[in-house]
Each structure stands twice: as structure tokens, then as C-alpha cells.
Amino acid sequence: MSMKATVRQVDSVTVVDVSGRITLGESCKELRDVIRGELGKGHKNILLNLADVTYIDSSGIGELVSAYTAVSNQGGKLKLLNLTKKVHDLLQITKLYTVFDVHDDEARAVSSFPTA
Image (tube, rainbow, N blue to C red; front, side, top):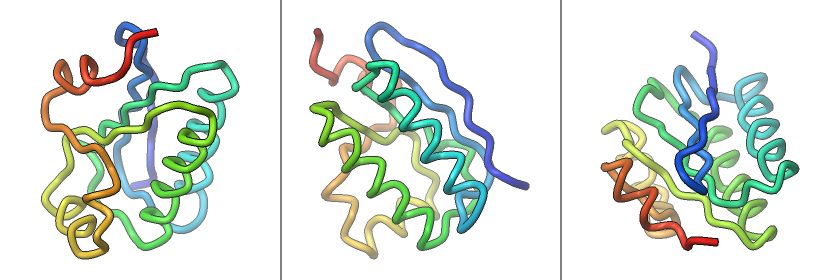
């Protein structure tokens, strides 16, 4: 199963619901395109909902870091929501869990963003 991303707005936050596998190739490119596209529209508060991500490889982790950097460079915030156990463990092992702002409740995650 390849990756799918759907975008929705919750207040001033862009929520990207990601499902499937984030791996080298098309899925990494698709995630990059979605994030860059939202930045291009001026959406700087981005919440990645990873609840339905079944697998992520090192390229996928790299893409999350790249997205985080791109959003931060635009003066925005990128946060993660609903990590699966596999993704959570991977972020712990790579020490990236401390880099990302991770939430498990969407309403609290949305309210944690700065208001415009």
C-alpha cells in the first residue's frame, strides 16, 4: 500500500492525515510535495497525523526531518500526532522524539500552535 495524504483545516492549523507507508520513492516525494504545497499557500502551522502510517523507513524519517526544517525555515511549526508504536519506537531510537513536538490528542495539538 502506498502513502496517501489528505489535507484539512482546523482553525489556523493545517492537518495532514497520512496513511500507508512512508518509504523511499513516491511516498517520500508525495509527502514533500504536500508539505511544500501547504507552505506555498502560506499555511505555516502543520500537524502531521500519522495514526494510519503502517511503516516508515529511514528515507521516511529523513523526509519528516526535511519537512520539519522546511516549515521551521518559513517561521512555522510542524508537529506530529497519533504516532503508532512502530513510528514512536523509531523516533525514540533515532533520538528524534526530542526534536518533534508529539501529541496524541488532536484538539490539544491544535490548541498548542501559536495563534495568528
